[in-house]
Length: 310
Image 1 (cartoon, helix red, strand yellow):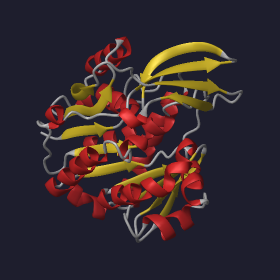
Image 2 (cartoon, one colour; image 1 turned 90 degrees about the horizontal axis):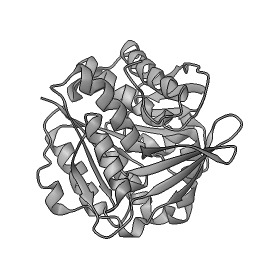
Image 3 (cartoon, rainbow, N blue to C red; image 1 turned 30 degrees about the horizontal axis):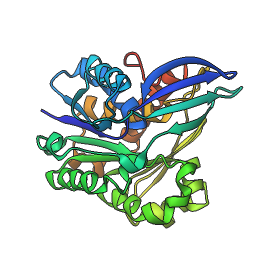
Image 4 (cartoon, helix red, strand yellow; image 1 turned 30 degrees about the vertical axis):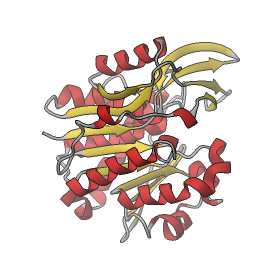
């Protein structure tokens, strides 16, 4: 039985339109993807284990988040509950085009992963690990996340890294860049948006990003560019795939659902780690096509995750 493990933060997203709150939903980049995976992979392939490694505070928001995970087929057994602390909150303000601008209320310096909670986590060949964002490089918990990633790599799991770098962390870039590079080295797939790389490396050109920064670390690179075509690099080839258009209600969770769709396609097509180096243009088109369908589906709603398989 394969297992999909998400490693990332949890937050409560409060969504605003015209400065008025529209909804409050559990969120977080990896979390959003894992909920979509629970609703799709979990329903169609019940033999696949789905779990989340994260942390929450000791409050009502933590109850909302963990209950929501379990209701959507994602195990919360590896979620650390920080005593006497508050869970993270983010404010998402939708502009006239329904793109989101975020304000975060988080205390990264007190992030915590309980070693006892992580004791039961093991990996097998062809398991899938999805991770990313600041959670993946936060120095406070880096010893734990690095250990999990190295164990997954040694076990032969497929590792998918969504860099998801926010401009609010630019001042820390010198400190966390070595962790970003290590994450890339450990991964089978690295994804990021052109916006991410503009903050990280000062360029949004996918060719330059791959040649100068990603290819020395990871062969398979996916660069998404909003509504523009997706660029895929595999060492031997550079492929460009169109993006499915959607009437956009909100872009929150679009990239996260792209990740979920990609992983759904890995599972539904029975792709193993040994198959990755043999993926041809047709296989890549199927992977990116499914990822795009998931992303477009999320853009059509106010929620951060797909309701069912698009």
